[in-house]
Length: 291
Image (tube, rainbow, N blue to C red; front, top):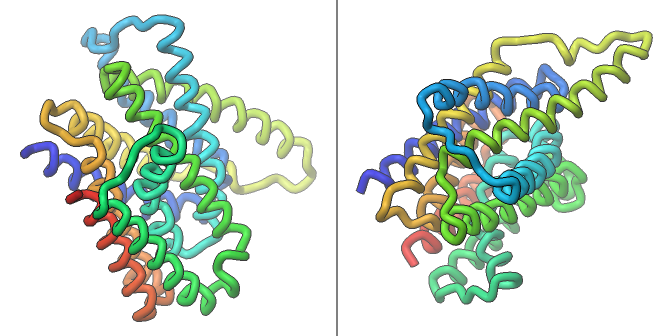
């Protein structure tokens, strides 16, 4: 089944995106990184216009995609600020919890009833975060009282709403993946351009000029990795036999790439408790995937 291979490929590029995003956020303002994540994807999709692959859509359909853009923008605003200030080996596993939160949202608001294995996956994943709270005390004190950890969880929760919204767009309204990706990038670029101009105009009035708005090649790399990961993800979803829930969960295996990079390359603390917690999160996601 090619869609499974595509899902894992998307996860790999998403892991590279996490690594480059962490590097970019260590050198640049969050709003600048957000802007390049959107504009690089938009520029890469422009050729599809000339190939005639982007159909006209109604005003109502535009409004639905604008809604998705605002949801994702809110999620990114929280998570990017947290990633800029937390170890990658902590933020990557938190971000991987989105499928678990998506199921909980579906239970609370869409009347879905998870299977026994799905509940087991949720319990295992939640327990793994308790282990992370123990390991995290060595790096940041009280794990769940750290404001940046809370921001990461809030951003991930909003991202989980986006996952439910994607399910609505693709499975119920039958949107074409390329159409959604193109217009989504258009509106994300508009949103982040507006925020960037607002912040930059305020910075110009200060006596001390900030260096956070200087261009660096890593900004293009972040956007490129995100575009490739998303493009492969949408192609996987477009396969007739693809299971959206399984594709989404496989994609979150990107946590392995980010976690190992943080521990092995960036020399973040890699205790046995952290590795056990990571193993628990992966196990929980697999239980959800095979159910």
